[in-house]
Length: 157
Image (cartoon, rainbow, N blue to C red; front, side, top):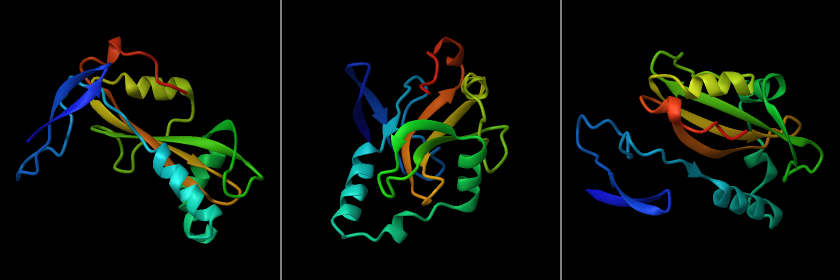
């Protein structure tokens, strides 16, 4: 099956397959497509504000994610949308070949840039976390690395 994705302002073919032995990669190697989850995040926040979802259901970050947020996360200027007491922290996890099974959590922008310029393709997950109330949400995921990694622009911080 072939779908089309908007890449750089124009439509590009994207192959999606669920056949046995397929790589599961929905985007061809020459397309650098990311996925933003801000709309989902806003819906969850509205549901909490309206009482449809309990705070305890969304403030359940894993202890390792909280540890990463406290120790290597990058602080933002945004207050937590759930508790309004603490600033959110961005944590990025990088998964790919020749990396640990649990991925890498770069502690500096330079380390993240280095991982994103690897010759092997990697997949990056950017999560926002509130270290105070344990709110967390996947903000975006994007591919990096690979053969064209040296020519790509710097990763957004």
